[in-house]
Amino acid sequence: MSLAKKLVNSGMPVSSTCKLLSIPRSSFYFYLKPINRKNSILNSKLAHLIQNFAYSFPSFGYRRITAILKQMGYHVNHKRIYRIYKQLNLQKSTSKGYKKKLLRIPFKPINPSKTNELWSLDVIEDTL
Image: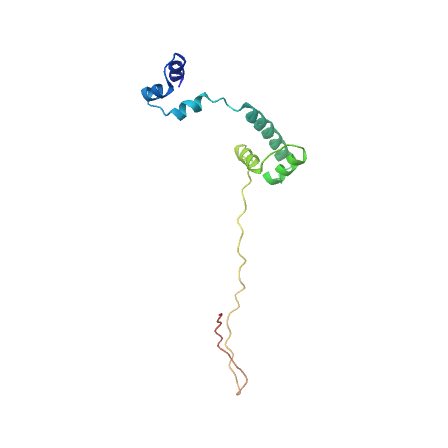
C-alpha cells in the first residue's frame, strides 16, 4: 500500500495505480482513512473500568456493568461492553440446567374381589 501511495502522490491516477498493483480501489481508500483514535482511547478506558468492576464484583455480568457505566455518565452500548468483556476473558461460563427427574411409581395391578369394586376408563384426549 505504501507503494500505491507513493505512485498516487507522484501524479499517477488512483484507478491506474490500483490496476497496476492488482488491488481494489476500495482497499486503497480504506488504507488512506485515518484510524479512529477517539474510539480506541475510549475503549481502553472502558476496558480498564470494566476490568476493575469485574474483579471488585465477580458476580456482575456485562449487563450490570453496562448499567453502572450509564449511571456514571458514560454513553455506552451494551454490545460494545459485551465485546470488551469477552476480549478481557471475563465472560463466565453458564451452568447447564438439569431436568427434574420424574418420580417413577411402579404400577401395582389391583385385583378386584367383587363386582363394581374397580372401574377404569380409557381416555383419549382430543382437541379441536
